[in-house]
Amino acid sequence: MKYILFDLDGTLLDFTTGEKNAFSDTIKHFSNYLVNDNECDEFSKINEYYFNEYSKGNMDRKTFHYHRFDEIKKYLKLAFDPVKANEYYVNSLKYQAILYDDVIDILDYLSKKYLLFAASNGQTIVQVKRLETAGIDKYFKKYYISEDVGYNKPNEGFFNYIFNDLNDNKKDEYVIIGDRLDTDILGGINVGIKTIYLNRFNKSGSIKPDYEIKSLNKLKKIL
Image (tube, rainbow, N blue to C red; front, side, top):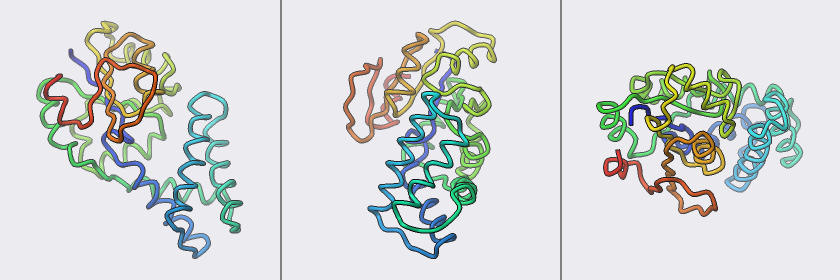
């Protein structure tokens, strides 16, 4: 094993809390309205739905961004511009860099043995800023973000871009670590690299990774 591809949201960064903070901040800014937990959960569901549609290639990023705020605007019965709200939200999200407790220790451990790379579906400016804000950018040799790569996980094009960029197609030298079966693990399986599923919240699914762990600390027994 030589290269470790790390997913970011849900794996290293607590996206759920960051999303809630950025969404609450956005609605307060445009409507002076304080959203409750149920309303935050509704936005999360809407965001997840349109993100999945975007990841599947069913819509472009601009459409995904517009629809998530257009739909939540209707749900909340508030008046604001979905485009401007999304711009504000993205800027706020850049600074939501909340790490899980097991992240720093495992990055310290793995970076001494392997080459680490970020492999994320998302906007480059958001993901890179969050890594810098969290202070973990120093662990990664390079970032592979879907906006730059031109493909989303699990598309094979995402991984082939990495293989070509590193000029190394030896699949047994790679492993991807992520919290989503449908993107991280399926993508890894499709291109023939090792997969480690981080299942922090005991989710079930039919896709079978090479390894399943509940905490990043368990990586010390595998890698």
